[in-house]
Length: 214
DNA sequence: CCAGCGATCGCCT
DNA sequence: GGCGATCGCTGGC
Image (cartoon, chains in turn orange, brown, blue):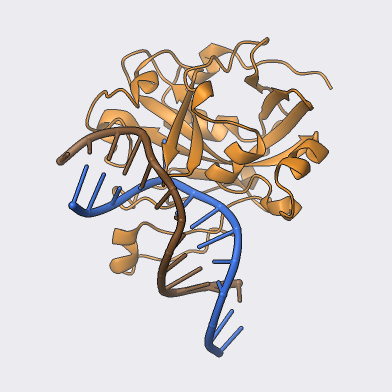
């Protein structure tokens, strides 16, 4: 398979523009056991200082520092005491905008992932941001790496174009702040797309209206 | 299929 | 000290 690493210029734009453009792109992970290639099927945009749901909303900290840097780098964070999540930093340096990678479909090296996640159904191998990181062996040691480096251990590459009519949008998952912003993007019909769960605040106010599948 | 819940700890208030 | 950009298991229908 021919893998063409994504250019930084593609990512040095607002997250809201980058997010849908990343659907269908490939995530390439080189591991001691071999190479895993996956197709991005679900992402979410986070818009830093103007977005109450962003880790960067209250400014720069040790944890979120990478988001304030150059586009194309990985922001990996640890949450709930056990899960990692992977973001692609977007925009210009100093602007903390990023795209959370929520789900991928494994296209190459699925046996490697199956052995990493024994007993898990194929559709769940990388369904959800925590599972995605588990599947591709991503943790904080990869925080800050350059996803545009063709020689890097984890990188983004071009994939087959996705027809615009297949792209769906909806509220972000698990977010209670700014729950009205439809900044989640996914490819219609992909089995690895998350089941929709609203944030606690939204749930309380009965804002659940869609299932996240259509 | 869905709702509920415990796990588990770094981060920020 | 409280709470997550979550997950996997349980129990109910």
